[in-house]
Image 1 (tube, rainbow, N blue to C red):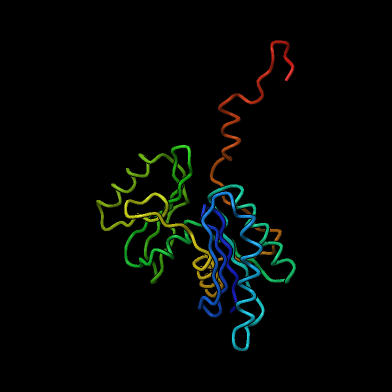
Image 2 (cartoon, one colour):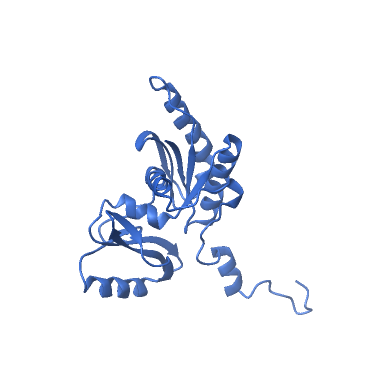
Length: 231
């Protein structure tokens, strides 16, 4: 199966093309504001690399895209690009949560893994994954909360066995979701029917909370009116 992966939910944007699980083209870029400028050229380069291989590769059969949680603008850019590509090619699309992608990229398969993403404003997105049939499965709905809340969860789980914390909020280094792992997980799920392959218009983001601009708006009380009541 030929799978195109797109991941833009964090400061690390990436595009990958996989053929039967093998990464045949990959591009990435670190810039929290550069998703749009990076994505289309990177996608074109990956397709060109694949076409230049001996004998080329087949037609993309599945598009896998990160659905969040993460940066609002990045998510919109990535998901819109993925949906447009899938629609133009007439192929299904699979949405993959970034916290699940981090679990795949962790390389852990025999212990509990807590995947984390920086939600900003002193908060963290996280999810708990546990081994099941040789794979890590998310065992609770992803959450957003304070670092103190996350630390309490880690401490509670660590009392019962080994726990690995990975992602953007981890003591042993920052890791971010990558398109190759996004495509890899979508491939596994498609093969085991553990996820629904969607029409592009059915793709939906996972936000977990309001956008930063909306939070700031609410904190400031919305539009401040003048003494005469005019906005």
